[in-house]
Amino acid sequence: MVHRRHLFFTFVLRACCCSALALQPPGDSFTVVSRNADGSRIIYTDGGDDDQRRARGRRRRHRRRRKLLSSPSSTFLPSLPEDRRHLLRETGYLEYVCMDNLQDLTTALRSVLATQRVLEGVGVGREGATALAATLDFLIRDGCGMIASLVLTSGFSSTFRRDIKRWKLFADAAVDAGITLEVVAPSLPSRWFLPVLCGANVCKALCGVAAGAVCGPVQLHWAARLGLGDEGLSEVAAKAGAQRTIVGATGLVLSGLFARWMGGRGANRPVWVGMYAVLTALHLLANYRSMRIVRLNWLNRERMDLILEDFLGRDGGSGDTLGLIDPAGAARVESLVFRPRVRRHQCGVRLGVSFNDLVRCSIESSSELQSRLIGGLGDGYVLSVSNNGRRRSVLVSFLRSLSRRDIARTCLHAKLVERALSELEQSGRRIDSPQLAQARADSDVVRLWPKFEKTARTAGWDLDKTEIAVEGYEVSIE
Image (cartoon, rainbow, N blue to C red; front, side, top):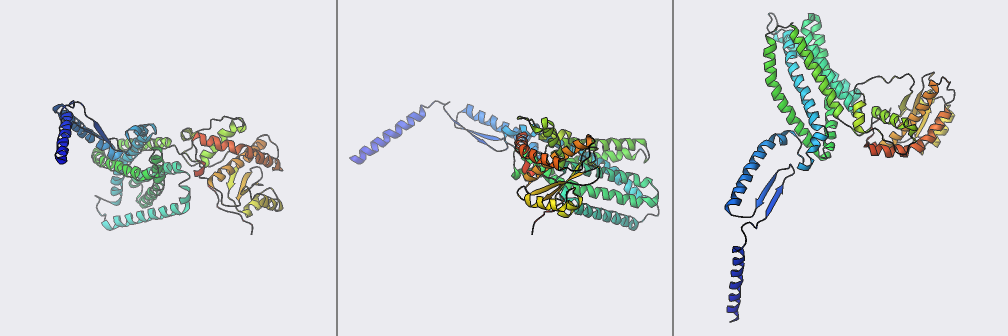
């Protein structure tokens, strides 16, 4: 009896549930949205009537069209969520990509002309020319390029990180010089053809080393600017490779048309020179603009001088609220070419000198420097002024391995001494004893360093990534 009653209540409960489901309004449904990291989404809607099925069909067709249109973006641009895609434009990444690929395209077009001229120079199409002679010319040319790449790597590998923009522009100027030498080599006397051809390959080899060394830091910069972090470096590098692939394919087509168009006008026609000059100028301008877009947030010697002059130029750094120049402002005004650091009323700064050089060049005696060496263990460095006639420099010996933030503090200290000495030079006074200038700088650096550190951080500078060239010596007492 109890079993029958249990079955009866079960039957009634199921009937009520089915009636409730049957009476449910057709429009009472829910929607589930699945979003991907690249911004795409898939919508699931619970409901089975004809209107909802047609709506789902329209959404599926819309997704197909959107996926088709977004395929180029996902292939050539870093994948960002939809709410962060504005960073591609606001950070300048899109403009940088356009400028960088434009200079690659101009290089491809000029390389066609250079290849034609080199083949003419080695004797292609000329009676008496042999394949062995051309092969030997190419072997000598390639050997010179290999030697040049090894020399540049050996002498300057440690400086690539400090001056990314300058080395990038140096690489672009080097490849322009190399292509130009290849174009003019066949027009020179035959005895000069091989030396000029070797010089052209040397320039191209220098470009390859320098451009390859700075490519990684630039891609890491864009990964950080786009919010991808260090993990996004691989994606930025992969997308840059895809961009170069499509630019290379475009360059192949345009190069064929360019070679055919230029081939019918003779080797000495002015149109060659004019077209080549336009492409070269466009290449340099594109590279110059691309480096202006890159806003590095760490300090090298050039950017350190910029922000120190800005900081000390505002009432000597005595103000409470200082708007220090930010990375964007520094990117607009910093020098992009290597130039000698020669100024009329400015001393030089040598960081990390040996104690022998400090004693030999300093205006102070060896006993005074030894006493300062013992007393300077807390700061980690000893600073002095060289005794170099009318042109003095600030010498700094490191007593221990300083952090990059401490090196930034050392630069501020040296800058304060440098300004004091420059003021004395401008006033025409003799500097027989710079102890007064050093003492004033010692007190100023204690007062100004916390304020400089705060304003630099507020402006967007990362002092922990400071890259300042030092001579590499570390002094110890044994």
